[in-house]
Image (cartoon, rainbow, N blue to C red):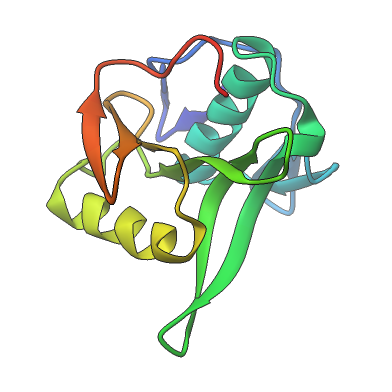
Length: 153
């Protein structure tokens, strides 16, 4: 597991067997979607746990999950952490991952709202690995839901 200043960081997501290596004094974690090792920062630790959850707990095919998808918003290039596409390649779930010490608050909701302005995903998930907030599109807005549906469709 990821060691951060001498302690093990446990998240409120399923534990999985991840590949971690050290190079030049930095830790790297293998991203199964990007098929490469990426620097292991606290936010990346959360992102990799979410990816594992989507693949193993929700049985979403890796071809339907995109990491760090970019879109232009009002002249600015924005990148969302994880985007899941449905079978027709429409945005289904947009996930914003934060480091465990970052609060899930109105700033995070605003951030995912900006990212979602162009995607218009059916579901939104804000997480720091410990706290999870989920939303479902209803008409032109979003309503909080307690959990992600077992079968995302």
